[in-house]
Amino acid sequence: MSDIFERLMQHSGPIGQHRERAHGYFAFPKLEGDISNRMIFRGKEKIIWSLNNYIGLANHPEVREADAEAAARFGLAAPMGARMMSGNTNYHEQLEAELAAFVKKEDAILLNYGYQGMSSIIDAICERHDIVVYDAESHACIIDGLRLHQGHRYVYQHNNLDNLEKQLQRATALIEKQKSGGILVITEGVFGMAGDQGKLKEIAALKKKYSFRLLVDDAHGFGTLGNSGAGAGEEQGIQDEIDLYFSTFAKSMASIGAFLAGPKNIIDYIRYNTRSQIFAKTLPLPLVVGNLKRLALLKSKPELRKKLWQNVHRLQQGLREKGFDIGNTNSPVTPIYMKGGVEEATAMVMDLRENFHIFCSIVVYPVIPKGHIIYRLIPTATHTDEDIDATLRAFEETKKKLDAGEYKVEAIPDMATA
View 1 (cartoon, rainbow, N blue to C red):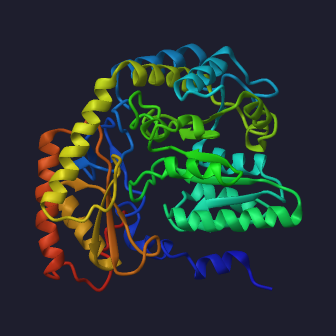
View 2: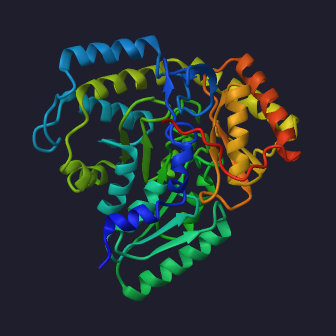
């Protein structure tokens, strides 16, 4: 018999193996100061490109005031208990109603967290004879939800409609063979790594040939896409074709929690059968009241979304003009694709942070194949033209160094905190 703890110490994981050099710098960094375009990292101001504060609500004065007033009035404990038992309030129901109306659905249910919420939804609505067909680049919360699913699941190549149709044919054939079950297709409104929108319009059109329901995770589209900010479905003109619409408050709303919207009878079923909500304490009232204010600002201040998109276009156009590969993004998410190993990537990140005062997220192996690097920039409404121009210059200079081999090192720089 082996000791579980001994195994964990011997095999710390593909990212954990670097913790002794990376902790506090490349992993688990500490950003200090008000959430904004510039914050403090290790005592120095940096231009921050790693926060999903898309329309700048995190430190909006009206949001801060609403949060403070709600905390003073209710405290952080209220209401106590799970929502079904003792944790329901008029504010919870008001937020659900306003969210449903905003995304043009009959009803909505609040969820404590986006990650937990998505995983729980899949578990609640799918039984063992049901089949899930999902995009290969679906978020980890979807993948973990599928691990709970006892039935078959078929993955289709990312945004590949021909491959999706093949998987729908497989699923349909299996349903007919077992004479039981239905099909759920899951995709995303915006894929958070590459920034490309899911092909919702084309997927919805397949309903004419195949029988399935469509669940869309629109965490990055909610608040950023569409004429009103209602998301990727509105942007693509097919919001009505989305059967279940999911989003989190952790992006455009700059808060905690999530919601699922859809037909009232289905939302009612989910409300009474989602284990992670039935057996968990309800969202505290300061968060609920604060989210009501955030939603009101999202609806009443379109200039915030306009400013976001001005910054998105300036940043992405500037990168393209300088010859950078930013893929097929058609959202604020801005990936920069480069070649190099983990060691080179961390050396470049260190140069960006220490000498150019640019803080952005980096993605390397094992998340993506060896030899590849993705820098992921998130423009927000709080960024300035000066921020963007400085960042473009920084990437231009560091890319030259990367191509010249100046970042080749034998190991990750040791920048761990003591």
